[in-house]
Structures are given as structure tokens and as C-alpha cells.
Length: 365
Ligand code: AMP
Image 1: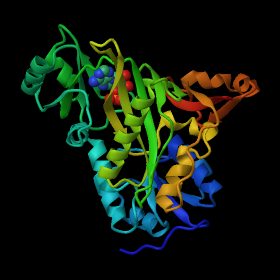
Image 2: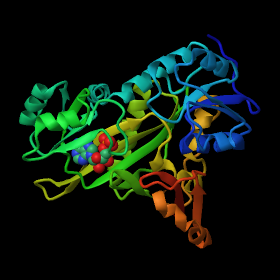
Image 3: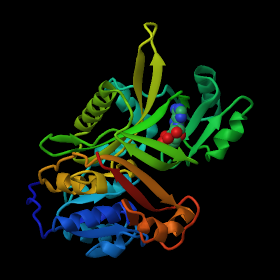
């Protein structure tokens, strides 16, 4: 199918109406691109888009009308149903492609894909029932982590298996859904790479970021991450290989564990273990809005529209703090702080655990 190139003034489609869709739409607007958001529920992206459609992901008539109104479709979350992605892909280019989506939606498929590329992950085993779980625990030991293969995020859909944990009850607590058991990685830091690949194979990565979580939700990102130069280069190379193998177009994030160990020669070594791939813009890349020449959101729009990728050069070292739940109530004080770049997502209810905004501080070199 030959498609006309996207030019400023055109409209692109985004599936999902959350804060990521909102920041993508704002970045698109800066490049003269209009957005049409498609989502079953209203959300903060609707407020900043030229058009929106509120319809179910299996409403083929609404999907067909949406596809006819846009030059290219992208998404802000990885749980887009396969049918939706494929239905749209028959009518209009969908980036990242449906295969990238299918690979990253399922933890078992994703880990096998990574290992086939020679990229290390935590040891894992397929768990389909309690018997398979007992077998996996006997192999991987305790503590280990049981995760549903699909639909997990922010620590949801996973449980730690400790000494004395009842395996039947633990498996049931995850709805007896297909799972994997992962061995525990004794990491010293969590890091991520946010990078973009263009249709012609161009690749541009932002600096390695260090991420701190609280209650399984990202709390603080610092970039560049304190890591050996060799480690950062290895993280970039792994991300490039992943993007290439998925024939990926757009921004992706690769979350990794950094493990420190001192070899017999007394020299510090850092090893990277990939935890997961997000086929989308990512919270650990929000700092790029204020801290880099091109933001991850603009980079994604550039990549999916076939525009040149932008520079990922940083303006200085950066710290990004998420405003979670009631943290956002301090917005007035934060706005008064010199050097604090405040981003609010326009959500009304500051429920605990809900991402309401973020604040970036660029520490000038
Ligand atoms: P995930 O949903 O896979 O991103 O996991 C959420 C968080 O749980 C990660 O950011 C880690 O802090 C922790 N975690 C997940 N898997 C492992 C593992 N295999 N070993 C150690 N910690 C893990």
C-alpha cells in the first residue's frame, strides 16, 4: 500500500487519551501536526487535540472512520488489542508496527525474543498452572516473582513468592492467568534507555536514565545515570538491536537492571539485565521535555511522520520528580521555585497512586 508522506498541517491519530497522548499531541502541534485521539474513555489528551472519538476498540465502524481521517496512527499504551492494531494497519500506517506490539504485550514472548537476540533477562519459566508454578519455584528458588504474562503495569499483576508463600493461593491471586516466574535480580540500580528509530533505520538515543520507584511507581528519574561509559554504551547498543529486530518506527523505552559485581581482579563490573520493553514514549523520558534539544514526544512524532530525527543533546544534568496523587496539591509552591519546570496533566481527582504531573529541574553544567 503506497501512502502519501505526512507534512505539517496533516492530522495523525493516537490511540489512548492519557497524559502520554496529551504530551504527544502537544509535541505534534509544535510541528504543525493536528491530532485525532481515539479512546473508549475521555482523558487529558482530549483537551489538547483537534479531534477526538470516544468509541470502543472493537467498534469497526468508528475505527474505519478514524483511519480515514488520519495519515498515520500511533498509540500511547501497549495494551492496544491486536484486532484494533491490525484493523487499522490494513487502512493506514500504524507505528510502531503490530508485531512490535504483540512481542512486547506478552512477557513470555518478550523475554524469549530478547534471549534470542543474546540480550540477558532475569531467568524465567512459563507458568500455566499450580503444578508448573511448583516446578518453576523448585528451579528458580525463593524469593522469586510471579508475573502475569499480559496487562501488568506499575507493579500490578505481580506477586513476590517468599519462604512459606502458598503457591496455589498466590497463583489464584493473579486470577490463575498465564504467568511467568522470574528469578530475583539483585540489582544496584534501575536504568532505562529511551530511543527512537526511523523508517530508514536511523537511531537516536537519549542519555541513560536512572529510575527510582516507590510502591512500584516511578518516583524520580535522573539523567545521565551514574554508570560506567562502557555500560551506557552497552545499554544503547542493546536498545538499537531491539529496535532493529522489531523493525521499529517511533520511540521505545527499555528498562534494565544494573548489577554491580567486583571480579576476582578487584575491578568493578556492571552488568545489564533487561526487564522490559515499552513500545511507546515512557515516564523515564519525561525529562527530555525540558532537558534535551528534542523531547521524546517530538522525537516520536518525527519518527512516525517520516521527519528527520532531532538532536538528543542534553542541556545539563536533569532530575524529574513525578507528582503522584496528592503531591500535585503543592503545584503553587512548585511553580514559585526558580528552575522548576512544572507539568500538570489536567486530571481532576488526585487519587493515591495516580500520575498527576511531573517537575523537571535542569542542573546547568
Ligand atoms: P515490572 O512490572 O516488570 O516493571 O516490575 C516492577 C518492578 O518490580 C521493577 O521496576 C523492579 O523494581 C521490580 N522487579 C521486577 N522484576 C524483578 C526481578 N526479576 N528481580 C528484581 N526486581 C524485580
